[in-house]
Image (tube, rainbow, N blue to C red):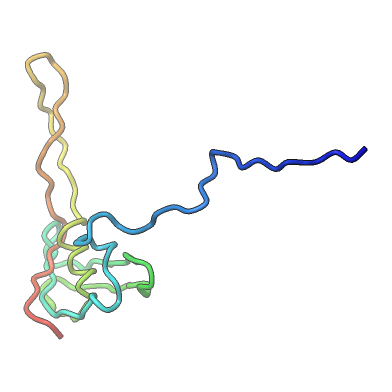
Amino acid sequence: MAATIIKEKTPLIHSKINKTPVNTDSIEAMTPDKDKKVYGKFLNIEYPGQTAKICCRLYRGMPYFQMTMVDGETYTIPLSVARFINERIHYEPHHFMRDEKGNEIKGQKSMPRYKFIIEGNA
C-alpha cells in the first residue's frame, strides 16, 4: 500500500516580502541615478577643529563610503552622505527633568555632531 505524502505550506514563512521603501524621499529610497555629487563645507560642531571619520553604505547598490574630514574644509561627496551627516548624526543630551508625578522625561532636543553645508552640485 503506497502512502501519499502531502506537503503543506507553513503559514509562517512568507514567499515574497515587499522591500520597496514607503517613504520615497528617504535616503534609503535613493538610487545611483538620483544620488548626485555635491560640494560643500564640513563643520565639526561637537569638537571644532578636529577631524571626523564618516563611513556609511546607505542604499542598495551604493559603494561603501569612507572619508576622514577636516573641520572647515571643502569636499565633494554624494548627496546621500551629505543628508546622512545633516539628518542622522546627532546625540540627545542627558536631562534630569521629571514631570509632576516624578517620572523621568526624555529630552526632546537632539544636538547635531557635524554639519555639511552644501554649496552646489559638482
